[in-house]
Length: 224
Image 1: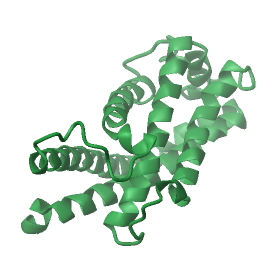
Image 2: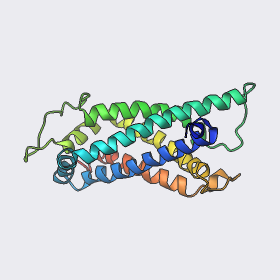
Image 3: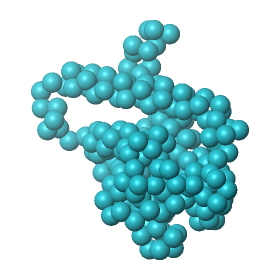
């Protein structure tokens, strides 16, 4: 097991598996977010369920996701260091054999996503960051009013801009990440035609849209 972890192939597999865990989580997250279109009652009841009867399961999911994120970041840094060590001369100036906007933005996009994750957790999970000053507001049933927080927060221009820019980074990250995960796990063959990656860009586009449509709808007063 240690030998596998230390090998380049092993690290690529770990990156692939942890990345796919992240993909599964964001799909579930989108399903929850989209309930904002149904109304205050629906998404507030969903939030109360997660933090009430479903709290233990939620913590299991959070621990799995935390381990996956930590392993993903560590292996990404280690693989980057190995790649640079293998090509010390002219590494930064070389033209990648397969290059897309998604692949060229993986590093800065990943860094932006880490910053976004911290902000997002402090904002909607722990509520230690409260730009809309909505932390202690409840709905008519005495539940935390997550719907009101979402609406009030995304009406603040810089919150929506930061969120939307981060979702662009997420979409690009997933585009290249899902495709490279398939190669690392042996379910996709190497290709010299990166633009023919059908599943990866479609999935990335759908996830980007699923997350971005809520702040856009708030700004457009569709959700109010």
